[in-house]
Length: 400
Image (cartoon, rainbow, N blue to C red):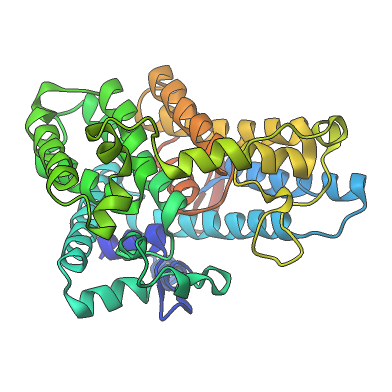
């Protein structure tokens, strides 16, 4: 049961583009936890006070650029309120299904089952199975009305996951999932080759960002037993790029590989667009205090016309706001390291390096997409930080 709970919570599919499963499954988990609590089957609840405080503090700090600039753009504040709600539901799910001693092992198993299911859906959709394609597409978010323009395009394959997320946010999610699992298995037996291969495949479906930056995680946590899976994946992508370069999905997904095979000088069209259009130096005033704007008046595109996370954050609240987002992100990454990897600075530094590189392209610092929900949820598995444990009919608080 926990595998389905974590799947719907973390991947957050929106069935028929409306039914947001993370909220529905969170509500079910809350009812389940309440029933077990009042029937005395659940004898304690754990509340991460410092993490909850960090989320509330971020909401409060995000209001400062609005007051300073006199704007009324509530997009950022609403994002962080949604993140607080998502984290609260994660706390409920953790207490209901993972609080026991084997919770970490159970979560790792559930994450792998999620990889298996997503791989089956992605591969069957790519093979053209109609009902699987419809299922995958019908779980995506409406994207502000822009979803239809991707259906039937060369990027439709990127919608072939059971999730509301797509494109860069989903690539960032799979990058963090890969990095976390490789780090976890660095101190245990290696990650099974089939899961590594399938994760690379579904990561590739999510976009070229995963293809390019997954190499960093593999290098950092490389083990020789991963070689067969890596060779199989390498043969797959090179074979597709060499023999099927005219296929619209292959041409888009493997553009960097195709360019490399053909001796081209470009890495990818998206990289060119980022460098030529989305990266620019904000004004001195914007660097100091921002403009208090995140979204453009249409409510969908971003103020300033940039996709870069650093530029968006600077335009909203200046360099100070970038630092706030960095510290918030660092907090949860460090909490994961403390709870899962004995405070490993190798994990902290490598994770922040990847997130910083990605933040050049689009928001990753404190951005409450599926990737950050994953990080927040992982941070719950342990006793690091200020945890308040509420026992049935009595309360105690402990500091660890």
